Length: 177
Image (cartoon, rainbow, N blue to C red; front, side, top):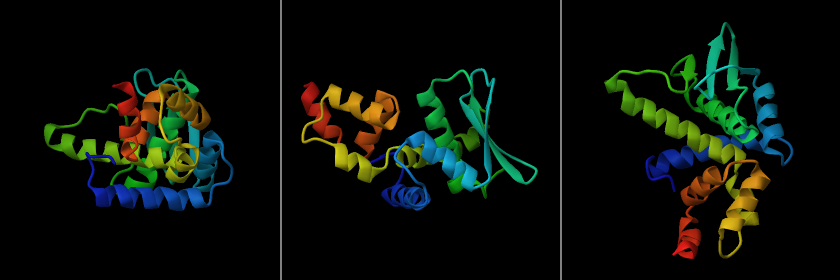
């Protein structure tokens, strides 16, 4: 489980993501998230964002997700899911979420929590717990993590993090010792 967020908050975010997933067809993570964005009237635009991976902004009455066109497809997938996390979890708090924006010191802790929550939502959205449970073997090896990462179109680091957050970390950490 994500030890940086309270168990209640993790559960709440998981339930939000699962509710969003319930109306999303297919098994392909990219198709799912683009369907979710379209269904909610969110435009996805690829842009030169230089050092940033993405942003979510309300422009007039519309919400727009900007994705760095130079990023890998895996990074783009996670970025879109992360920005959808901001949309579903935080859109009432502000109209703009920009990765890497400068914030004052007293806002750093709040911003860190918001980013962790968006990451938690993204993980639930593109690597749903039920789907991982169906594919997980008794022992997890490096090859298993790589296979899972490929099947969900995420990096091995993203898959490792998700497995740890779901409580499977001990299955592959023992293998490394």
